[in-house]
Length: 346
Image (cartoon, rainbow, N blue to C red; front, side):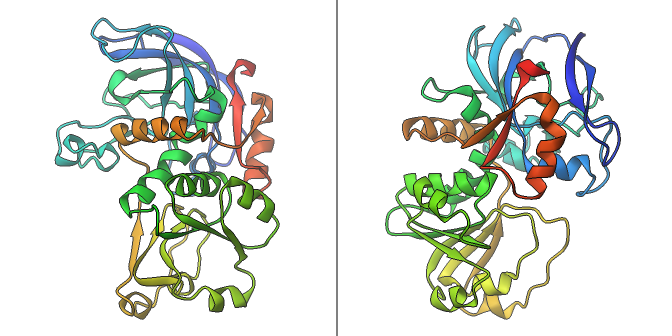
């Protein structure tokens, strides 16, 4: 076991504090990663505050990890010391079910193992990226292409794949009109990726406060959802609407913006249930769907795509001592657009 410094949540809703944790020794197929940068995802906050249900404490959040390989196990074939690598939301799965064999480890029917707030196959709790080092099986590590700097690549391990996967699945591309609800950590990557895929992109945000940013990121249009005229003007417009917000929405209103046969895909995860009049789905043969991150192979595909198109996250680099302040600012939507921890400051 190796002792490393980390920032942990000692109990639900408690502030994060500096501590030490144990990392396992490198096994045959393991990779030891010196973490360089770790993104702060809103889901870190949901879990630290038990907004999504009972959690495991102490908790070291962080599933947007970018770093450099410092040691490999004797059986490792995919990575070598010095490689630039990333770890996203998963560090293991059953590897035997139909979904795992299809590259959909995020939907493992045997139960995937989250990067943090989970129990590994060894019975020990998993600890995430707000730490100096992490040990991960090589099959759940991805390579970060040279064209991406590690700091802006870190958020791609969640925010990038969470938006890339549904946009690819639902066919975003030339000739398609895509709307992105919310211009935050997820939404700004949704705009960049949809634009790079060749779609016509519209941002639907509560206000026009970030309009200039949205257009610079690749949006063709920007509308305020607080203006009732928006829903009248855009009725029946979109092939795909990607909802990236974690607040409950009037889904009936947003479904009215879809073309016949269009899809409203939700990647945000509100803590509260929603109400829906099913006539808003039946009329127009529309789809209300969900999407959760992506498999390991698709995550690598996303990183390669982002490198090829020069897409990194828009970040605000912080020191570890600023994490609690950053949490407060995420909740109040005061970040453009992803906080990233410089783990050298841990």
